Image (cartoon, rainbow, N blue to C red; front, side, top):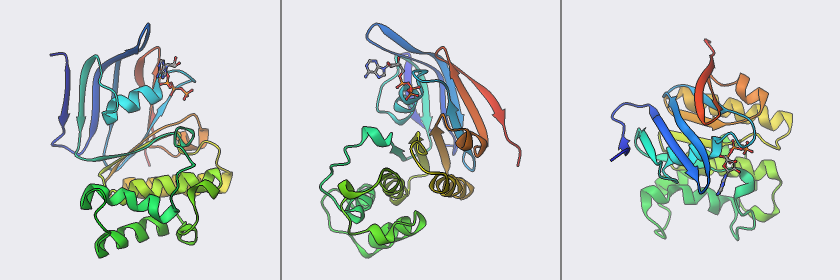
Length: 222
Ligand SMILES: Nc1ncnc2c1ncn2[C@@H]1O[C@H](COP(=O)(O)OP(=O)(O)OP(=O)(O)O)[C@@H](O)[C@H]1O
């Protein structure tokens, strides 16, 4: 079998020689990606380069035609905000609480521990005051923060985000990037696909996708 997906005994997320295409459209042609615990890794590349496709493969949403993917345990995926149906009939608190389903099981009531996890995630993203607001009444930046809080509430060791800063104002973008750096510093893997220069600058490692292959563009030594 050419394709292999494994749980990584180390704390790194790793994709090796990944091939994937849509019908009649090859996209990934031997892409490699490594994202280490404790670092923010950015996946860069022009429109249509295959960033979302590679994230989908890395997260297990799409099965590669060839290649290997290792994941260090559970993973939380924040898709592009525009790919999320913001007409969700949910409050912000309800949305963030769905992040705890992995611990408590679908439709089981929130335990005290789950409520504390949800509260901490909302506090961290500065959205406690939005807890009772409906998601479909929020601005784009507020939805983005709620989605990241939901991912944090999963307590997964790996956080994968697709263009998390797109459409955010300067201050919100800066705050979100600082939060991602803090999350990585706690020993988690943070991987973000991005076009945003400030997000690239704030990342420890930048991997660029070009013609379906990837190369490390730079590693920032802090
Ligand atoms: N569901 C799909 N079916 C067919 N082709 C697709 C599908 N999704 C993406 N593609 C194509 O695959 C290629 C890579 O798309 P992908 O969304 O992965 O790129 P990207 O780097 O994330 O782009 P962007 O920066 O514009 O979001 C593009 O040519 C796109 O048109």
